[in-house]
Amino acid sequence: MRLAAIDWLIIALSLVVCFVPALFFGKRASKNTSEFFVSGRSVPWWLAGLSMVATTFSSDTPNLVTDIVRRQGVAGNWAWWSFVLTGIATVFFYARLWRRLGVMTDLEFYELRYSGKAARVVRGFRALYLGFFYNCIIMATVNLAACKIAAVLFGLDRWQTLLVVGALNVAFAMHAGLWGALVIDMIQFFVKMTAVIAAAYFAVSLPQVGGVSGLMSKLSSLRGPGGVHYLDILPSFQDDRDLALAVFVMPLAVAWWAVWYPGSEPGGGSYIAQRMLASKSEKDALGAVLFFNVAHYVLRPWPWILVGLASIVVYPELADIQRAFPHVDPKLVGHDIGYPAMLKFLPAGFLGLMVGGLVAANSSTILTHLNWGPRIA
Image 1 (spheres, rainbow, N blue to C red):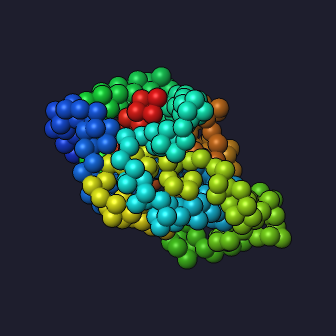
Image 2: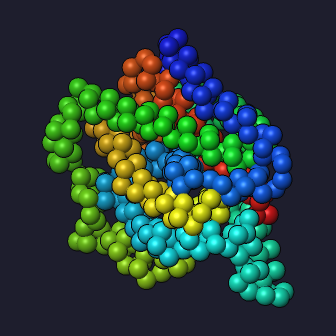
Image 3: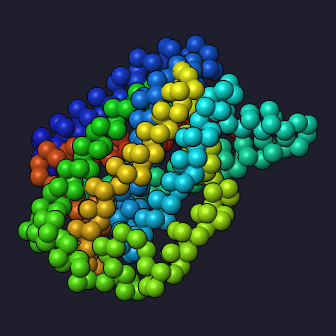
């Protein structure tokens, strides 16, 4: 895609607005480990909540939702919407308790809750597993999405994308600590949400889509893999029993206590717990997680879903995406790439805002993981 001068200007302004304020927190973050890792336990609920939402909105998230929509329709999102049960449990049962602990890491809880050698072994194992193995996998998936987006938008090789985002994120993670990550997250949240709402508007407004009514009309007569109805909100027990089982049975029977993922497990955990531990009061911890769950499950997904649905009309098959972007490595072409493929229809200015928003989305997650990983290890 060709970016106009106004696009480059907006990209530059987005990066300046997002990252420069964090430079002022370097001195504060270097005072002690409490300031660097938990911001001196003085974070208000709205900042902690915005940071939670921004951190879980990464460069791979719109791609993931688009992949789900193209394969399983809107109802496929219940694969992760179903975790709202444990998210609400965190709000009403665990948020105040996390703040009351007064620890710096969620893994310190193990040595408070248990005792002796067994507690140290559990903490050591989880530090290695989460801080090294799991943390690296999350960052790898986020950066893979960045590589796919950059390949579509700019034709960049993977190493070029990783060099740019890696240098940017590592430099700020080392300097600003959690305060810098929180401020960057807050600004990036508004940049990213503006960009994705604009992307949804222009995607639905395309002549071949025909607005919301045209989109509904076209997709009502289409069926996805296995006869999936793209517009169904709830999974069909008749057409897709496996998904219905995964959505309505597994979360109640197993997932609520067995699944570990930030914001989804009972009690939060990892960087969600980190924000609660950094909150200035128990009330702020509760307010932050409540805001996160409302934004995460109710408000934020729909712009991505609309783009995913519009991409089905514009690019019904993967071969259509490959033909539209012949320079993209075929190994990178999947249903998830339908999201960046739709960005070609953004007008000048909005494309630059989207690029700035996607850089922000990548950084908001990577910065948190670079701060959180060493903290628990």
